[in-house]
Image (tube, rainbow, N blue to C red; front, side, top):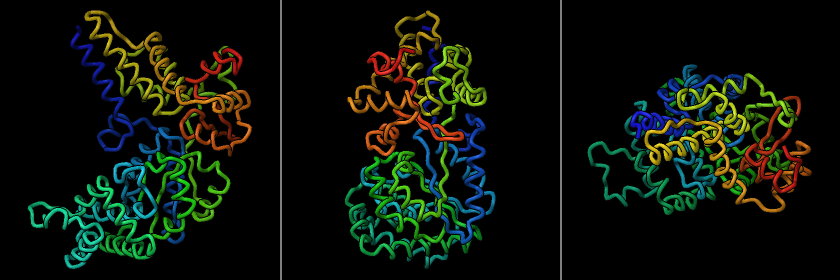
Length: 431
């Protein structure tokens, strides 16, 4: 076994797990410039908010690079005199338990946690009153037996842990504020005002990973409770799934409350509409170069044939997370081969890619039914489903079975990995 080759693939495999890029170190090492127009759109809405309390919806396919872009945006905008709090709802609350109340509670908690981390000097009496407010609502000090006297104790870190892990804490918070949401909002605004007074900076909160919620949960939160989420008196960026803005009623409700401040992040378009069907398919150079550059930063050139890299990009449909997922599966196959066949040369080539695609294709298709296949076939042939508001189509869009592209018009295509399955079933003409 080549120990050096094994370590090289292990490093590549590890690099491919660094997604999204959140820390400055990760961004510096792996960041490839893209999405500057999206950052400019976000900056314009934040900087030019008339009352300084605008709410922005940021949407796009899961895995298209929103989290990495938001981290980059945070680094840029906080240099413009903003106190920025960026947090993942997935790391804060059990996803199945997310509701509008614990989202707002998480905002209050994250504001104080960030203030602690940045050593914002809130007057001691005021800070103690805020700590007591949190402790009373979560009862964490009762559970922990007055651990506040222990060296290095931080009540906000403790509550953050409890909010994530303890269903009872979440239920108590929901019960406490379900009929008096204004009290919770008042506390949020008090915390924000204190931070703003001390730091002399405007407040911006960015909540990531709401787009990973089930669509039914998103409807419950944003259709029934969008007014509550818009009440805090400072700027907030919420992420939502791309499928949500295809639902007429829900989209209208959201746009009405946020004054149409919606920023979509499109998938990187590898082909012009219909060009992927042509025998001599030519990808769009700019998009292909961006994705290939991302691969090259994570996988050494010696481990990946250049033409195979382009095929990985094409099979991703332009979705960053999908490209990473395909490349990671290729690395897994290579790591197994190195251990099984010591001494043999191993590289990610077309043969390895085909094995990876077969595995991922099976993962995709196992969850599809007859109606799903019919929708996929129509979408492939017409670049649009019969009914883009049909729930089954929205579920396929949310699950990345269907990808949305934009230029002068919005159009859809089937995830490239699924095309062969449709062809084998006789649902489309063979490619």
